[in-house]
Image (cartoon, rainbow, N blue to C red):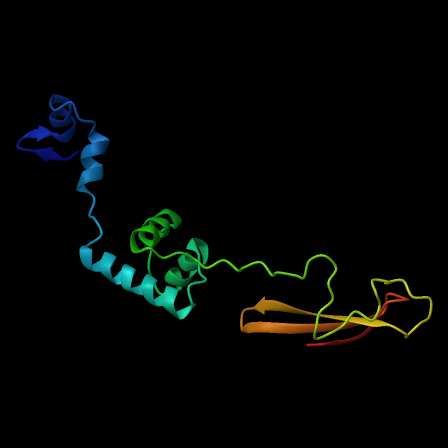
Amino acid sequence: MLKKAGNSIHQICRCLSLSSSTFYYRMKPRASKLTNISLEIAMKASHHDMDGIYGKCRMLVELIKKGFKLGLDKIRRVMKKLGLVAKTPKRHAYPRGGKSSILAPNHLNWQFNPTRFNRYWSGDITYIRIRQGWLYLAIVMDLCSGRIVGGFF
């Protein structure tokens, strides 16, 4: 049991109407300003390096990899303080009202149930984010059978 000036911490805290847990909480060492400044610098650098797409969860993983010991709440507070906001992808605007594209006219005229095999094919491209970057997947499908004719990575 700790003693200060001949009295126990518990007795001193009771006289001051202070719980002993508050005393021990205030005795804990605080993060230095240097640690906070280096955290802010690392957060700004990560935000800039990742083109502003990292939110609090991915920022936490990134900073833990760099050796910082902190939690999600601290990340959220510091990001708010620094004004770091993750970019959200914008919604794609498709043509409205059934208008066909000028570059690729609509030859099917919205008839997607042909009766002959290999007469009409449709394709699509999608982007899949992986650890190394982006993976591009292109698929070609026969509209009559619904079979995949080809695909490319």
